[in-house]
Image 1 (cartoon, rainbow, N blue to C red):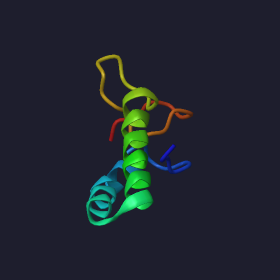
Image 2: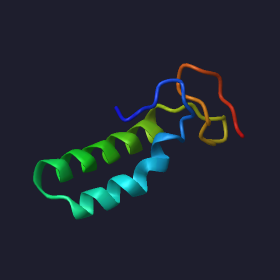
Image 3: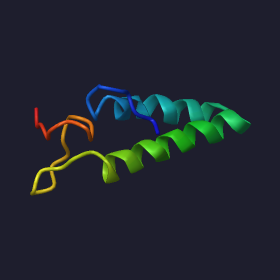
Length: 69
């Protein structure tokens, strides 16, 4: 999982543009690995990060209380 331990839930997605740019400029195994990490990050945000009752994504990781900043 592309997850920064004890960081904000949004920290890893901030790296998304870097992953995508690297993937577009890279070849072979590196390209595939970067795209897989981007997919894992999206899955983490959509399925693991806590949400409020109305669906807002928390800024804190799953083991912490929901927080909106």
